[in-house]
Structure formats: C-alpha cells, structure tokens
Length: 215
Ligand code: E4P
Image (cartoon, rainbow, N blue to C red; front, side, top):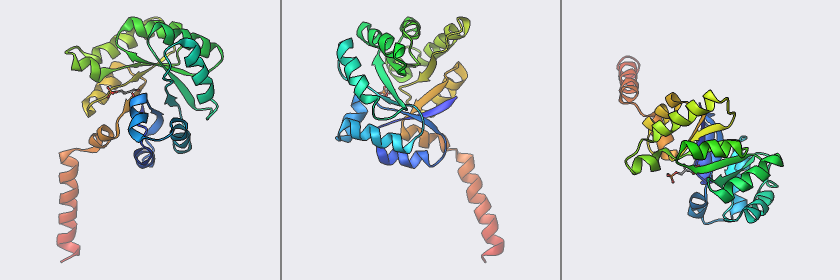
C-alpha cells in the first residue's frame, strides 16, 4: 500500500517528502482554506515537491462548472488529479473528464454503491472516508474491505484511497483491508514512527556506549 499525505501545508509536505515515503498528495477545500493562500499557487507549489498524483478539488456543484474548473487545474501540472464528490453532478463530471483522459478521484465515498458507480463513471481513484464513518458509530475499515472485495471480484481497476485517517491503526487496518493507498495527515504519519521499545532501545544503546567510550 502506498502513502499519500493529506494536507495542503507546504512546510509539512516538504518535511515528510524528505523521508521518501510519499507517493502523492491529497487536498480538499477545507485543507486549502486553512492555508489562506491562492488555491492554484498552493497546488502548483505542491507539484514541485512531490512527483506523484496531487488531488485538487473544484468547488463548483454543477458538472459543467466543475469541468471548467478542472480544465484550468490540470493545466498546472501533469500530475494533477481532479477530486469530485460522489454525487450525480460529480459522477457526470467524472465520466466526461475521464473520457478526456483526465485522472479523477471520487471523494466523500461512504458506501460500496458510491464506489462502484464512481468506478463505472471512469474514476481513477475512489476515496472512502474511514474516520467519518467511525464517527457515526459505523465501521470505516469494513467499508474499505467491502469495496476492495467488490473491486477484486469484478476486476475493477479503480484504486482505493483510504481517506479520513485519524490514527496509525487506521493505516495498518486499511492496508490489511486491501486499500491501494492511504492518505494520511502529518500528525498521524509522525505517530506511525513512534514505538516505546524503539525509544527505549535507543536510550539503552546510548547509555551502554557512553558507559565505555565517554567516561
Ligand atoms: C481525503 O482526500 C480528504 O482530504 C480527507 O481524508 C478528509 O478527512 P477528514 O475527515 O479528516 O476531514
């Protein structure tokens, strides 16, 4: 399973990109708004840091308007992927954009049927939102598992991005459930490194070394 970073913050993307663990970036209107900068400028800057799919989301609601926005966004860089909502207008836009060879990521997916229809409309990626499903007392990982099963049974090539990741266990379980990608916020990526035994082991190596070589 590949890792994307789920942020529009340039400093965070630069910091994590140095580790060599990132294959792409996802943004959404809320993440872009947090940066209080020009949308296209932020997206353009991201394309200079990570050489992989960069999801950018039009904010229009009607397919015709979404397509106009998408056509401007894809001019920024070849790696731009157009994020579309799992709605009738979103899928209409997905169908037209995918016929034009534009890569798409259908977002706000909360059911197998939404994922299935997105794939039929030509989506390159679908993004089921694990955390938001868990928030309403349902099982987000089970949703990933079910979508992965349906895609495998029917040989559907659309890639599954596990989104709305809240903790490191979501990442492990998304990988086990068959997600192709997990898009992970910076805070969770940092938590994925943490293990008390690693920290204890480093402390013990240092103490043993210093007891002999730095008396
Ligand atoms: C995915 O592409 C979305 O940007 C993201 O994962 C949304 O997650 P949230 O529920 O934390 O807002």
